[in-house]
Image (cartoon, rainbow, N blue to C red; front, top):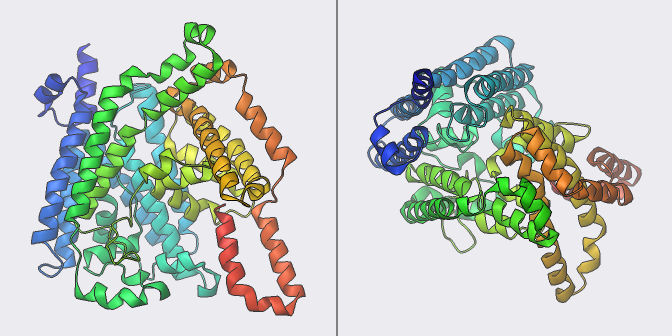
Length: 507
């Protein structure tokens, strides 16, 4: 018992807040995490006011952001926080030594392997099923940053401009970051504990006091003068996001135990509950697990905004937008009418990372490759792989329905409303069915749940994908290119077709 107590203290960092943990009956690592995030929020206001780019140099801002980040990491995770420095330092060495031509591949393999090794060790050496804050959580975000940076350097320094997409041109990096800039990007206090991931160019522009300088595209020309004349205050947005995050925390603490996910695999529940009631309970049990993610990600977004990071230009009404690195859109999630819409609004920065690193660059079976990469990134629990393998067939089925069925419901508002209601219900049940293994973690309980449903959604999705096939993206693109080459008049539509193809990638 003493050994277990010692190990727990080592895993959770500082024991200074042990009395608070005992008083609130919450694990110490969770208490440390919340307190450090609140301290980061206060530090962010101080950072924006007293270390504003107009008052101090980028060097000072980098140093302070990095030192504060490492302090919070040490407070939460103890010496395990050294993994953040080791992973970052190892991949920076690879970037310097291997050159820009192939470093993106090496960094992806090394960073992901290091993360996977730590995740496997934590799961099978520490506590299997420990569902609380752990040092591999921040490493997941750092892995995203390392690999994104490597691919963006490769795009900016090893590829020709005409071979880049519009998005890659914006994010491409034209010079190698210094060691301080690299560690500041990976380990700054605003994002080290819970993210979110951001692009390197966005972060450097924030540090140097020139937000959106590389994003001032054709559509932003009207607002350029305004961007240079004033700097909008994030205070109202920060207050709104902090209030939202703590409301979500309150909801999670009050209703999570009322609908435990484990009841979905209880033998008595399965035997004595009508199937329609099981469906309703599945939805409610998974619905009540989401607010904890809403709390963590919304608070993390507020911290970045409080520091002045996250400004994304002005909307059509002239109001400032602070959603550049937002990780979720709660209403869009809860009212999603397709699997894709749900995923596009859930863990947004991770979806963008997967898209930029894998989906856009994988020539064959990009959907399957992206789900597999996502499963590897999430961790060593078998339930993660069951979730993402299920997600592949559900995505293919949802894409088939959207391409083949949806057009028939767009002829009238009433038909469109009926389609939206049906697809909302189908999407919510499909999401819940898919992510049950993600929560249960183990193979046995996950398969028990799927057996209780007779693998019905798996079978249905496979049938839909076979009966209503949608051509793979690379074949659709080849057909478009072939039609352009055969008809010279269509070359005039090249720009429009490129835009259409880009939209197709995300459909």
